[in-house]
Figure 1 (cartoon, helix red, strand yellow):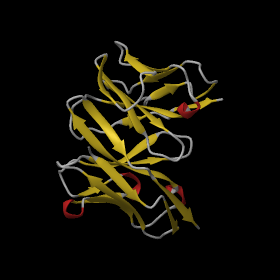
Figure 2: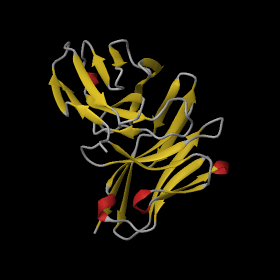
Figure 3: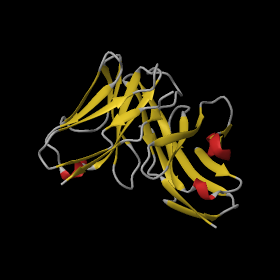
Figure 4: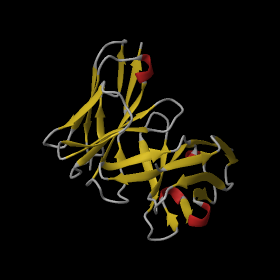
Length: 115
Length: 115
């Protein structure tokens, strides 16, 4: 079964600093990977997705992620953090099987941004 | 265009009761999925429906059931509620099913509290 592991349940950065949120996947076939963000009392918003077209994926709000097959990783980065980036971030893999296309989520990483 | 809409936003029930949650997908989306998000965890897949038929089921007991209507809206039913059913229930829609790499778009969820 496919799975994702998010390293670090809580990451704290200063405003303007680099954001790095880690995600490793476990898959026997090329995966389809996603990053979602969840603000308090809201649902999940898609940040970006990897579907094998390019290893460096650019998303919304200045975020990007790089797919590294040799490291089975799909880490999320942003060069300069803003206060508005404080939220919960989830990495997910698409589990495509004959029954459907479920998303398998990691446990999430809470990003805190201080001024 | 309206996104995924869910109702109600909040619900309080007691143990043993039954609950029905509702979801309207994005216009044109034919597939609806349900997820359970317990506080502090990532969402867990419950069901996927497409063209009124169940296409995928996660590891949840038979107390959980769902259906999809001809207009592609969906209901999630939970019987014999337990304290452990307290969670945010998220609905997600996508254009099709069994389409690799397609993202799922989430509503803001229904917060279910069991007393």
